[in-house]
Length: 285
Image 1 (spheres, rainbow, N blue to C red):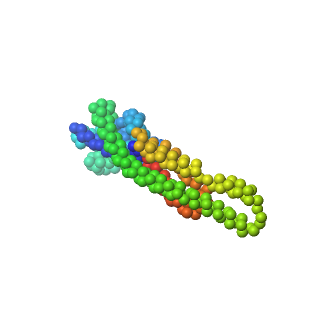
Image 2 (image 1 turned 90 degrees about the horizontal axis):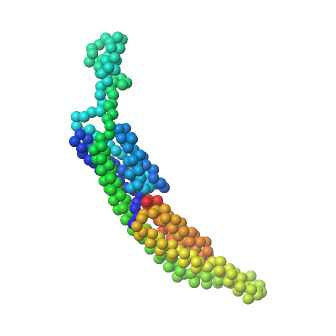
Image 3 (image 1 turned 90 degrees about the vertical axis):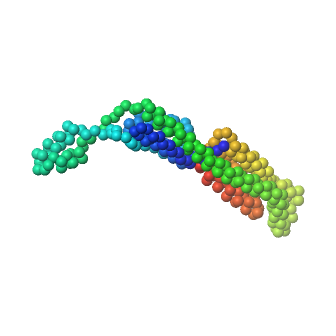
């Protein structure tokens, strides 16, 4: 079953003093393009987190966010007492004022606060991995549901192409007869004597150039192959893209050989259906 590259997953875990939120959003892309927003305390784990995401999502433009909100009394910021006192002393030396005003000014100056970086808490990191895996499950469910919608649309388009192909087959005999009559009339209008046998040979050779038997067979096979590939266990948008290119090649050849207005009109309809397939193909994983 095919999957869409479009999806969204979110999971929240509440710890005693922190709330951990994982958000993952994906859009279509030719390859995996992963943008990660991670707190500085967990930068050393970024590569591992990226590998987990890449193995699950495979392809797409992915935005990953790890957000941590303190809900307890803990704080990682500490007043740098020595620096603040030094600032206050300098302020006293250049201006008059009370210590409260000087303190308000000092804490806004560089290095007044320092951030204590603790080692990564293993239990907290396990909670992050749990949240990540649950968010990935959610986004993959989203992708599968979107894939079902795409699959339904593809099958309708393929069915439409098969109907148009049947119409092409039905009018093919009339087409060759009309081309033959048109050529015979053009020659008759020249009002010159012709070698009948030679003319018939040349006419047969000419009509063979407009024969679309092989194109009809190949197009039918490509349409069947596309429908079969949709039902395969893995989602392979690139493979479907290659098949749609082959479908387009046969349709174009039929159009160039048609030399018959009613058939060319059918070819235009076929191209329109195929173009819609190609547009949606950009979203397939």
